[in-house]
Amino acid sequence: MKKGEVCSWSFDREWLASCDEAERMLMYRSSYRTFQMMKNLMPVMEGAALFGKIFMGTGNFPIVLVSLIWAAQTGSYCYFCGRLGKRGLSR
Image (cartoon, rainbow, N blue to C red; front, side):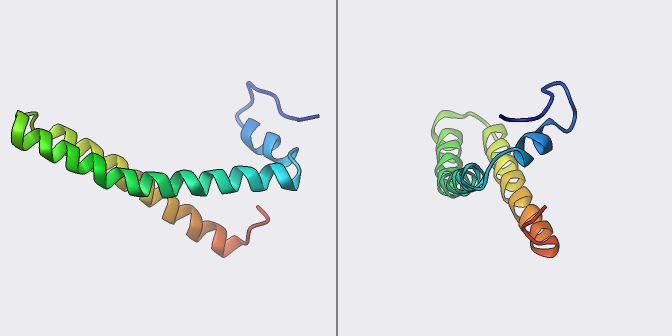
């Protein structure tokens, strides 16, 4: 039975602690696969935004938006990899 109060601020931590190793590994692997997919999809989206600017006059906002999303996703991945690498994978 899973633990954790849904309205609690620490729900994610409590729920993850109640998962067994197989469920955690499934979440970790799917998270990494999602990162890999986004890493490949973001340049395509950037190219589509650039194409829209050049040929359809959509402006710079789509290019800036995709770039910010890409930077946030890559930055958060690098931050948490470094943080987990220093502390170990137990936490």
